[in-house]
Image (cartoon, rainbow, N blue to C red):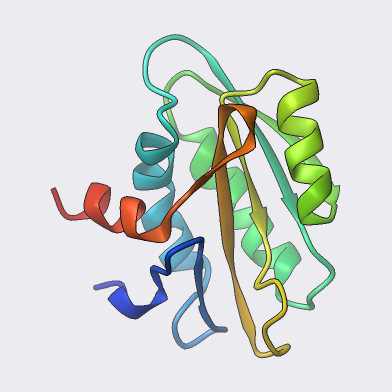
Length: 134
């Protein structure tokens, strides 16, 4: 499956669910997200959460599965959170980064992934796209 390149935005990955973003797209994107976060050598902790959208638990589970297959990644699954809570948890746990399943302010038919590296520094969807197609 070729990912729709239009879902890779300046501050996140987002699109219409399930046409553009779905479990298959999430699982395909996770290795590139890990590289873009910079969780390279040694065991790294990543915080994982989701918002209250109806499609979020399914995408959250896909993230958990895909992250579980990544070498040297320890996932802290925190469940239902807000984006500011993700930032707080990444800093509190001194994590290498974090991901939350959310499409922020977009309508309910959308969903996506917001990613940060250590110190809750945003990771661009464009950076993930570069990692995917290098």
